[in-house]
Length: 431
Image 1 (spheres, rainbow, N blue to C red):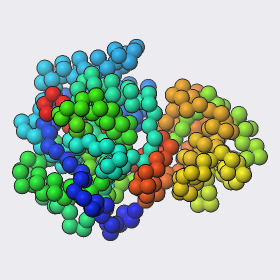
Image 2 (image 1 turned 90 degrees about the vertical axis):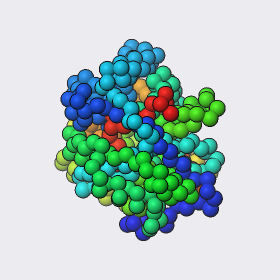
Image 3 (image 1 turned 60 degrees about the vertical axis):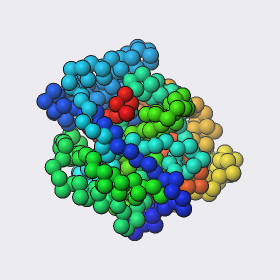
Image 4 (image 1 turned 45 degrees about the horizontal axis):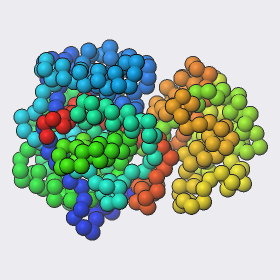
């Protein structure tokens, strides 16, 4: 996809497109917390545990991480703890619902990025309808965990990040640009330096303009595949029309506000670097890269222009792995997928390296998925494992594969910036 602002709009021929509906947002009462920044969190799967989790819990006793990642011995106890905490915060006035249903304009600004979009309750559609396009596989145990949490709390605690490609004159963007001239409902700056602002849209004419603009569009899941799968599972459990037919999302027009695409790295918890390198003999080229992490990442980027490449770390050094044996790839990668899928780094990593070379099962105790590059290296060094550092895939490749109905290996991409969790929640009891 061309992200210069001149991309072709993803318009559908029929009117069975996106239906983003207003809801009564549940928000923190500023007077009841230390600061809005102190109660926010990255999405649940970006929080680095245990360090990041402890940091967030200590930032404020009401930090949203106590709802999205509650801590207890058993899963059932964790989920009940989150529900009890949510009920207590509502009773104590820490969280309160807005007076009327609204769509919310959300703005993030920092690190050279200005991003604006709409938060609302999206009517769920079946995968076959092609309204919302996933591009990654999901892990069943994560879906089960998120489903149990949503079921127990009866709430959508953080929005998915969806993208679409709008037309040059898009009514939704017109409403957004008009709304941001007003005084926001909230404004805060999180510790990563990003500025966040939120406005509500309640005017019937503006809501109708947004609905008309989105009704012919499809969206790509940029972040939140497990939560989307959770929404669909819970809708199946509640087939009657009602609040379970909708899910909380942030929708971004990437023709106007392009996202950044970063890689998600793998931490192989039980595989030392020395063993990983030894197993590659004869099937990949391995070179040690001297210098700090930025130098190693530059070498990785250069290597990916010629084919599949990875960085291994965890023994105090960086090792560039590239030039796979073509015969090995032919033998280990399925042939019934498009060439763009067969040549993905994530495909080669999972199909060739993890399954056939290293014999690593795709289980939580064996593989951790970490967004932050330095954190992946640090954890590998601390625990004696191997960090596999990836180079990001281009957004147009992701979208093209999704439109073909082809899913990438799980945790292949990280679109950002991601919405801060905790600025607006959706309670299904209010819908």
